[in-house]
Length: 371
Image 1 (cartoon, one colour):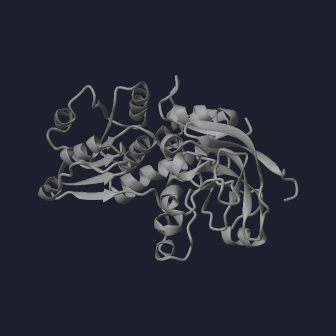
Image 2 (image 1 turned 60 degrees about the horizontal axis):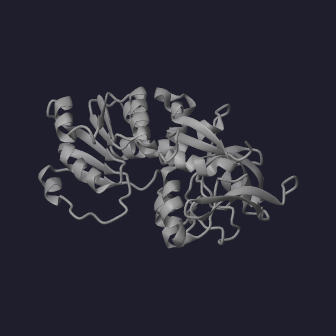
Image 3 (image 1 turned 90 degrees about the vertical axis):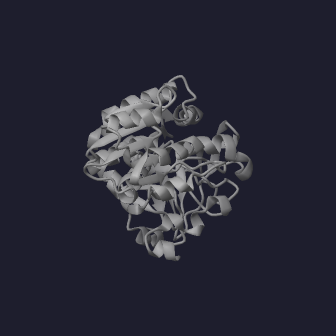
């Protein structure tokens, strides 16, 4: 660990809605572990959920799982396993899988039980400080690298704030293309215009969809996002608080409705609407996590219209690699999502901006711990 400090500064969530900048000790590097020097860490909507609702169950932690940085130090065994060397620049996935279960062996490590942070597993940006060595989040100057860390190389010359788009963009590719099977001629309706929804627009455009329609609400943050959705390639946007969704969509599609519906809202009304606007033999992707049980679920609609319904859980390794390629060539203007960069001391503002809780909302933002 020659040249590394004994401590670094990190934004520690100490209570619901409260962040404190604290010195945190850097752990010793073992033959199988390492240390990442953060360049930036993107802010995800899930960070807002932790910030407000999940603290009591998990305690103080360093949030942030869209980490981009340099391998500052690592053991020989770790470097051999990772295929990297000290000084290499990489983006991390949030998952810390076991590496040997059936899901890991088949490339679906996101389903590995070891990544189940709700059940004691490890995940970057979702593991409390009490779990040694404590530096599990990207809103920090340095971050611990577990032996099972999953890396993606960052293309030369690509700014960190753009590389930090890789995970949300990967969700868009996974949900829209790899699982949703969007393709030429399709009408794709994306419910929700946050980071995931906007990434789905890019993926649908790249896949050759004929018509892309995005829904949102009347809030200032959604108005900003819906306008940007059109810049990315959406043909139409619908404010569901001001317009009747079914009638408007029927008018826009000549009664055809949607070949593919992707719900990114995580709301009961969004899920119910998805089944209503999908055409017969259509596909429905449920990407937004519903935080409570639904009172009603229209199974008859699914059966009667022969719908294919699939729940989403993050992204695959392939999706992140494809996302990095799209970002590297700025496909469809995707880099425009990276609208703001905050310093470490303003981590609280960054999280609130993503949640639409600040005077100046953001499409996607990053924390630069050295700013």
